[in-house]
Every structure is written in C-alpha cells, then in structure tokens.
Image (cartoon, rainbow, N blue to C red; front, top):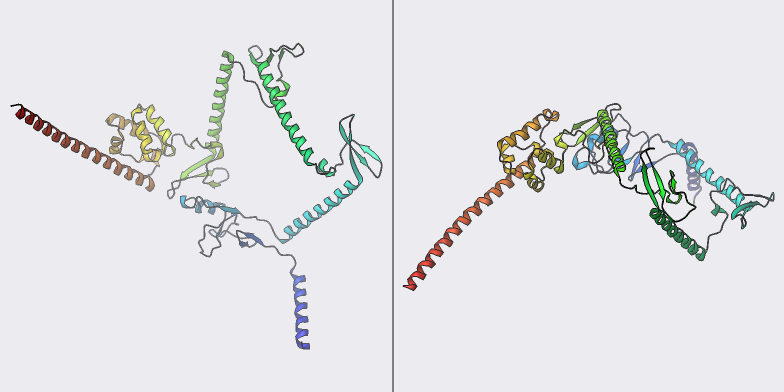
Length: 428
C-alpha cells in the first residue's frame, strides 16, 4: 500500500473516534418493528402525545401503523370493523439519560448482590438441631451461632445443595399424605360438628356431638382445622330469615352502587357504529367499554329498550300478557333494537293479532324517556327488512300449501267417486 492510502485510513479512524466521543449515549425504542421517535405526537390531532400504536390502522399506507392519543383512539376504533384491532402501549417520559441510569443501576445492583451472596455463602454454614427440630446458622469467621437467618439471603436454598431424586420423591409423598390427612380431618369435623343460630345473641355457634369428653360441647369459634372452610348452618326459620335479609341487603347495596355509577357517566350512541360511548362527567374521559361496576348483564339505563337482549324482551312481553309469542321471539331473535323498529304489520306477522295489545306495546314504548332521542340504525332496518321478507316467504308458502292441499283433496274425492261408480257397475 502507498503512504497516501495509509494516511487516509488513519485520518478516517481518528474522525470515527472523535464522533463516538462526541455523540454520547443514544436511545432507540422499537414498537412492532417500527422505531419510535422521542416525543411522538398523535398522527390525527397532532397536538397531544401518542399513547398507543395500532399496526392495523395505516392511513399513510406506508406499513408503519398509526400512533394515537386517548381521544383519537376512541374515535378511530369505535366502529365495529376496527373494534378488534390490537393496540400497543407507548412508553413516554423515557430518554437516553433515564434509560442509561436505569440500565447502569440494575447492573450495579445485580453485581453487588452476587458479590454479597458469594461472601455470605463462604462465611455462613447451615446445620440442623435434632433436639429443637430447627436449623441454626454458624459464622466461620467469628465462630458465632444464631437461629436467625442472615438478612442478605433470599431463602434457605442459597446454603443448601440441590436435593436428590429420592429426597424429592419423599417430599412429594409427604405433601400428598399431609393433604390426605387434612381432608380426612375436615370430613370428620363436618360429621361431628353442627353450626346453629342463636336467636338471643344473633350469631352462629358450633355444637360438638362426638364421643370425646375433652372437646368443648359449645363454642363460638370455628373448629381449628377447617381453615378457610366453614360448615353449612342447620336449616330453620331463623337461618331462612337471615338468608333472605342478606339477599335483600345485597340487592339494595348493588342497586345503590349501580345508581352511583350511572350518575357519574353519560352514555351516547354512536350513529356510525351503533355502539355506546361512555363519558365520565368528572374527568371527561371517553371509552367504548362499559364501566366495570355495571357488570356484563346490567344495562346502563334499564328503561332503554335498545339495550335489551332477547331474554329481556321476552320477559317484558310476558309481563304484558303476551306469553304466547315467546316462541316467535326466540325463533326470530327479536332483541330491543329490532323491536323498536317494528311497525303495526310487523307485530301482526309476529303473531299478535289483537289491536289493543299492539297499542299497549306502542304506548309503553313511547312513554319511556329514551324514545324522544331514539333513531333506528341502518343495520337494524336491514334486519327488519330481512324479517319482513321471511314473513312474506312464509306466508306465500302457507298459501301454496293450502292451494295444493285443496287441489289434492279434490283429486282424491274425484277418484273415490269414480272408484265407487266402477264398483257399482261391476255389481250390476
């Protein structure tokens, strides 16, 4: 090589060293195979910081997905087509200095922890004392013994070698036999004890009816070896009244809790997707998910028929005295939104023939508070049109069957008359 090439390589190496020293630590965060820039903003509002990343949504069509804030996440994924999109949380407030401090701190903590454990294992020994049935720790440097384990040890396995195969088998057998013994003790206690209710004191007590003279006959405390289990109380009038009171108090408390949750939230139906968006009145945060305290079966508004399922509609019609249409409701899966889109002819096709019964249903719906702002969704109207088409096809099939049976009956009667005429001619 020439001197010119060697000097150029030397200058390039010096420049690289200078760049490495001047750059300092850098941080790169990757989410779903995409590099996240520091302080990434939402791609829709471009004002707030991004909180989630959705790889399925890609309005730029570059395969990088969309970074969204809280409000834009609700707006984008409120439609049913995007409801199943999987979003990834974006870590915010993380820079190169904070990341370096965390990594260095974790490394130093692990290094010092390992050194401390090595010194402790080399200095302490663990021995068993048969008379007391306990272990003690001996310091080989100070020649002192102690029943207390050194605080730097995580557990006793740091000073004990791994057990052999036979020791593991013995321990498993001991655990199994101990469990069988506990279960046998619990079954014996359930046979020998009774849980009774004291009307004077207003509490339960335990009565022992076994043959032993050492056990207490009556005690307020639960038997010791039942642990978290308890005996079933003997059935009598007092216990039945107590159970009814508990169920009533549970119902009252649950009703109170549901009313508090409903007063803190506001629910509005999205006209695009038909789903409800719940807004917290204090914080202003919106979410598609129903508040967890409402549970899966409780509606946000019990009077809103658009939230009812098929079972709720069936119960409501039974209370109105229309039990005979229950089979039709289950057959065609008539839920709350579909029931609200019905007109007079739809109720007749469903099997409700009396005019006063149809008027009673429509008046009950119109008297509810939600009906003033209710609008039928296009999806619901499409379901109603399909159901009407089904009713028309079914009605046409019934008419065709009646016509066919009439014609078939006339043919059979004609054949019977012709057969009778031929028999009479043969007899003559």
